[in-house]
Image (cartoon, rainbow, N blue to C red):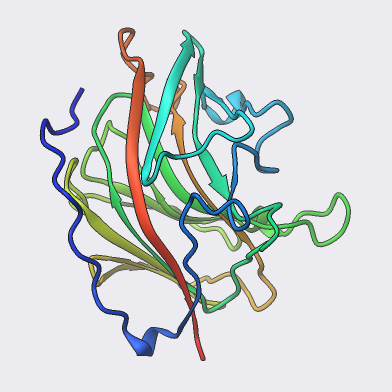
Length: 244
C-alpha cells in the first residue's frame, strides 16, 4: 500500500475570506440530519454501478469514519464503498449557481482508488432529469496518473480537464469549486487552475456527494491488486459559501 507510514495531521484551516460569501453549509459527515450515508439516486437500485466501470456496492448507512473514506473488498468483483450525500436528508441542502464549495483532501496512489467530490441534481419533473443530471465533478482521481485531477462539468458539457502536477499522494491539498452560471471555476490551494467558460446556468440545483469508488478495469483505470483488502482517501472541512 502506498499510504505513508506516518500519518501527519492536516494543516490548519485558513481563516475564512469574507469576500467569498457567507457559509451556508459546513456540517461534518457524521451529522445524519445533513448527510445520508450509503444511498444515492445517482446509483441504480441495489447500489451497484458496473456500467460506469465501478466495483462499488453501496450499503445503507456505510459512510466515512471521521474524514477517512475506506472501501472494503467483499469479493473479486465487489467492494463495499463509502458514500455520503445531502440528498434525502432532513436538511436537504442543495447547491445553487454562484456557490463555492471547498474541502481539504488527501489521496493515495493505491491501485484501483477512485475518490471523488461531485454533484447530482433532482429531476425537474418526474422522469425528466436536469441537463447532465446536474453533475459537476469537483474532483476525480485515479492512481494511474498519481499527480493528476479530472475536473468536469456535465451540465453544459465540454471536454473534461485532465490537469497534471496538481496533487501529491499523501500530501494534503485544498480544492475549491465555484459553480458559476456562466463558468465553473476550480482552485487548488488558493490558485485558480481551470475555468470551463460554460457554467451551470441560472436554474441549476444539486446535492453534494463525496465518495470513494473502486475502478473496474476499463478506460485505463486499473482494478485493485489481487491481495488488496482496503483502499482509502481522506476529505474534511467541507464548506459551502454563498454570495451575499
